[in-house]
Length: 564
Image 1 (cartoon, rainbow, N blue to C red):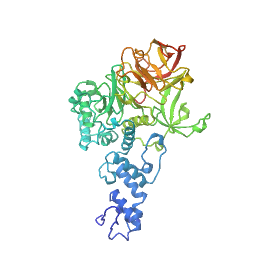
Image 2 (cartoon, one colour):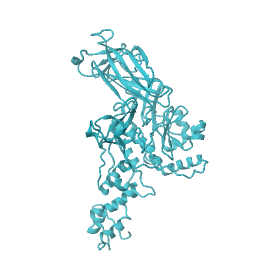
Image 3 (cartoon, rainbow, N blue to C red):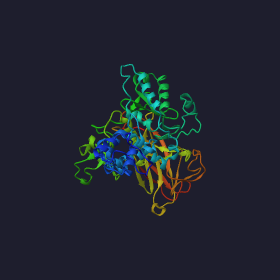
Image 4 (cartoon, rainbow, N blue to C red):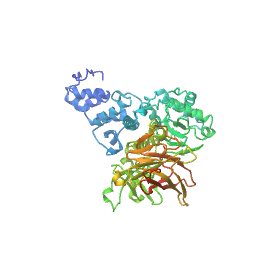
């Protein structure tokens, strides 16, 4: 390599003594130079054999392995832009390398000049690239809280911290790269926690505090308000230490788990096992697994291929992702990759993808990145959207809302021009178990409905634990509110909000009326929620027609495989 002399981009490359080398000999030399130099040789070399070597698949396959740790079919595939583009775009290794370099640059890495002992974490770079792209468009105020990559010494601190916590002879076991690499790409969020907690952890000063800026979304139920923040690595270690000093079972039973995300008041926390990559939710003095098993079993989030369908043969060989298992029907909800629909299928018509068909092969600790990838999938497919987390304070509390707005977990029904949509979120941290959101809106025209406005008067909820008699809950309005629905929104006034719960000016409120409450845990932790709402055309004070019932279609109460 002492014979290589590189001039500025666009000029000729001077390679004394190499013009007579054949392509194989030239390739052996180029394997020792940086990718950026090889690109310059390819573009400017006057030696044909050298230019061919600089364009060869063998050279760029070697660079893909050294820089990104990708080999085989992965070395020829581009980063996924989104789950709506599930086809594995296979290109040459050089083309793939260029696209991976672009994705890496957005994360703060210069891959074309990368020199390091460990390859760049391609899988994390891909999913972070997708997440940042979504945030740029949909939630820029959360995007602004993201930090640059963690320093190498911080990542090494994680290894030392966990090693010091063990006394079973495994202290030298390395932390899974699939875990540590999250912070190698982005070192959490800058947004401070509640001031007194931030001071305890020496994490920010609590100023510019906004509780609804959590990266992993949130919800509210009465006075319980939660969004989950991704912690910088040093803050994660400090918080874990803080908790172990106060919670005995963490110190004794979970020495390899580190808190990586938490709510602003620590009401909700997520931990990751730094060796296995399993993710856990803090569940009222217990830890509850928050990511399902991977290959070899069918579980929520499993990637599957459809087969043996006779009624709909056009679906055979399509790829999809398992959602919930509907026990009464004995069928899986399968979200097709083309985004066309969610289908209910028997297990005999579903086959788990083998390793060769998976986007990423299974590796130690990959439960953490699968948990992260599934969350990004839900953002990109509009299951989770940006909306006010506390409707009575809207729009000042807009953040990523965990009440599903699309997909199999959403119920939707239209009756007499009133659309009722509903969904729930499992709350591992809360004694009630679930919080649910019911949205009310008018659809169609006044002529089609037969009225301009209508007002809610009463409601009836039917809450049924699987296999038991249902509980019936009836009452006036919802939590003291009697929304008056109008085209495009609803009317806020003393008749619709007699107790002044909304801290907003009276008038037309755009968008659906949102009602949020809780449903309690039960013995089986499975059930269904449905009901009816009674409306009067016009308003209660000035009705223009007879009352009518609007149906609340059933939605499930369950503990999901992925918990967020």
